[in-house]
Picture 1: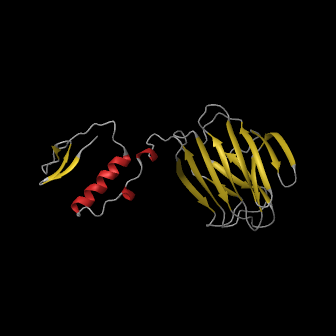
Picture 2 (picture 1 turned 30 degrees about the vertical axis):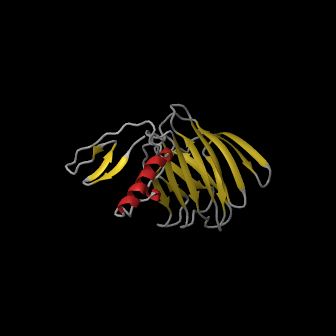
Picture 3 (picture 1 turned 45 degrees about the vertical axis):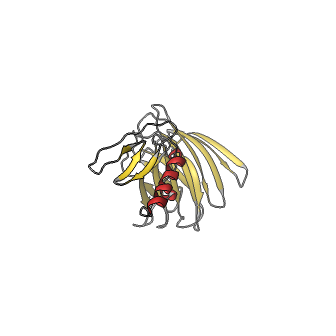
Length: 222
């Protein structure tokens, strides 16, 4: 148990004074908990009537802090079409070596009609993609090999959006899982049949343009 007491010139911890000259008292006690420390602080506040800005709401539980969390999302960039409508949203040149995966969130509108949203990597329009997709509203599905892109959703002139998970932490082919749409929902899984590092992510309209309200945000997963 830690004994905290108020003395004439300061606070004592287990009989050792915390001096004004900057000396530090180290306390090691396996019985110390966040709750006990908070109770001691409240007791000091009550006894002195001077430390009235400290209370337990100022202290986050130590158990809630995980300094080795490997699931953090790090925002890399947002690309939008505010500069003008176009068929493609391209990322800048990316260095994803620090991440095990990438999350892409997209939303927007088509300039006209209902259109599919397609995914490409590294500006590669060759037949290096494989994908399978299901249209949940119509209860249909399809699969394609040697495709030039991966279907990741759809949108119309009113709205649309989706999320794409990209596995990048491997020297093997890049795998993709996506869900997106408007009132038409698509669930898709695909593979980019290349071991090259991903340096660019592009979303492409199957026809017409992304409206100026469209955007995509790219996050790295540590």
